[in-house]
Length: 200
Image 1 (cartoon, rainbow, N blue to C red):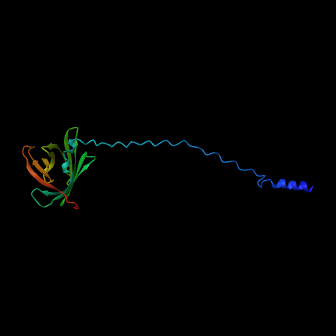
Image 2 (cartoon, rainbow, N blue to C red):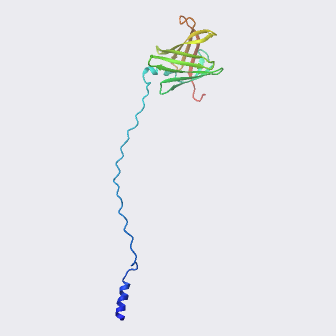
């Protein structure tokens, strides 16, 4: 009996301690995803071309800049003028700031349908004048009908000639006619000098 008991005890000692417990199932195999497709290079967005690139649109570019304005032949400044190219070169905006009195401004653009330049001027006196014209011998010449320019009830034609000078300045010569363009007399004559860096 002792021998049988010893054999039984030996058999029991051979049973692992974990007998009677179920082992957890093995983890599922990892899911293998297909390799990512190589990145397709994106073409750059096409550049939007301005519609105003021909020489006709560039005829007035010489006026663009920041200017101090003087009467022709005088050293006394009377105004500053900021002339900006706008809307991808399709228009030119003028901001006229006299040192004394009210200001004004204009928009100028080339009318491709009519094939001439147009300028609309508005000032702090309530004046609204439409000019039209174009380049003549390298100068920009614009003419418009200005109501009450001579006096109340007395209209006139104003012709403005802009010309670039060798020193980089721009001359704006204004002439007035009271006989529908038969004769002309100077009404103003300004020199636009480039504003020095740092000036306001």
